[in-house]
Image 1 (cartoon, one colour):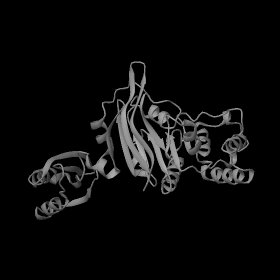
Image 2 (image 1 turned 90 degrees about the horizontal axis):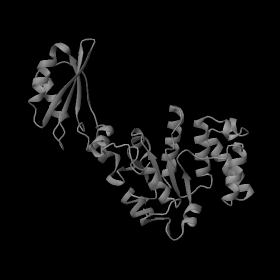
Image 3 (image 1 turned 45 degrees about the horizontal axis):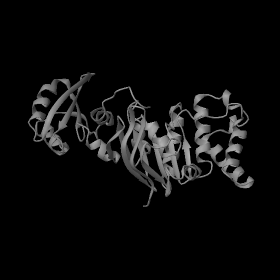
Image 4 (image 1 turned 90 degrees about the vertical axis):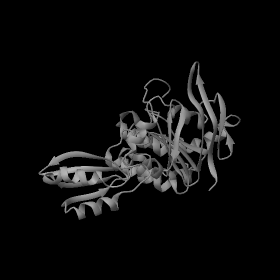
Length: 319
């Protein structure tokens, strides 16, 4: 697949603060890239530069072949962008706002009407079409912002915190929409919600202090977790100590962690050495030792562990 977004050694400085530091990555058609980082990592600044709303200090980005340094207006024309906070015209109704966006996107009357009908249905905006935007809840304002971003059906979408302010059902709906659109578009979503990587993304870039610290698939991120391929067992509390001893003796086991005891059942997590799988060995060991197991499952790892490993978590700096 061709790369629709190319970011090349991009940096952005505000006075003495280097907010974005030599960032490079690309996004192909058919990819949904999760752009992750702690507060102040430079996520929103990077997205403002990539969309042409802020000039870079050095480096560049190309969107659908257009260079943000030499032709930022063409970039803005070709993308769909949901900025942080989804700034909207509060005195307009939802209907009036979407009609206004259709007009400045140069959609014909018929095409605009058709596209508005489509995005209103997708975003669940039917019952608020004639309300002034300033009267809407945060969740509805976010949905209006997303509706304007996809109204002209762009090939590239750049979405800053697209599920911010949405309830769980709305978050699920938007994630499913992003996955669906991602099959034929190049999409970047900035988020601090790690579950969105598994729910909607095909790739993730983690940025910290303005620098890319990881670029990989969700599977590659999970593989970096200390608990990747760990085995969780639930056994009778009377067998807990014996099971722990048996499990520690299995090859490629680095640790056995004891969890909660509930209704006479204790939880044990068997953590493998990096790069090893131990599920078959664990199953064989408890079977040979006649340890009764109430539950046994393998875990893929925890993204929050990987996130903490890779980021320093400082709050200062660029948002």
